[in-house]
Amino acid sequence: MSSEPGGQLPLHRQLEDEIRARIASGRWRPGTSLPSEASLSAEFGVSRGTVRQALMGLRDDGLLFGGRGRRPVVRSGAKSQSFSTFLSFTGWARSLGLEPGQRTLEVARREANAEACCALELPDGALVVDVLRLRLLDGEPAMLERSSFVPDVGRLLFDFDAESDSVFEFLHGRGVSLDRAHHTIDAIAASTADAQILGVAGGSPLLRERRTTFDSGGRAVEYSDDRYLPALTNFSIENRVGRSAALVRQRNEAC
Image (cartoon, rainbow, N blue to C red):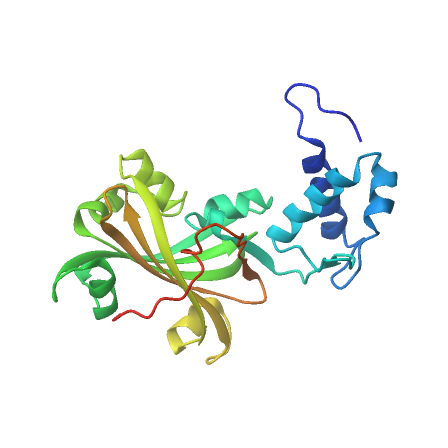
């Protein structure tokens, strides 16, 4: 493995990419134990510290599991989404080398439902802009996205080509400062409407991620109910001692 001249990826990132390629090609299949750190170090001509860095990155991305004296094992083929990319399905897909896509089913101004009113701190009967999209990974259905935006942000979306790019990237370009989000993840059975759009049987299990997104001023500007096919997508969370677990702790709230 080559050294790190200016502009080249660090060695641990090069090693990560090589291991990803072996997994993607099927050379190392789900359930396969990787060679030992010593073997990887010898094969690629890098230090064991570099190997550990690479393996840590792959664990954080959900491609490997195991550790503490045991060889890491390749996870199933589900595409893992980390919280560091949670604000952008498009950015996450591209980071994995996959082609994101979408079919926009609706962009409409209407009264907010009770859950959106609660999350966005709006009075009953308030108007929001709702967006309903089917999200794709390499052309295959992966997630059903239902988002509600406060009116002054949502109105911008009537000028957005919803088939072409990320909503959040578009809003950022229009001066909307999206700063943080609160996520709740659970399991849910596919409703009749979900099943028809995703092409699964009614009652099929889905991973649901409910998100409230805040701007830099602390105002809630978007509430989303996203429903993922679990065979294609899972979520990975990294938690470290001494750091806030605000993104991963469960909160019991009125809504």
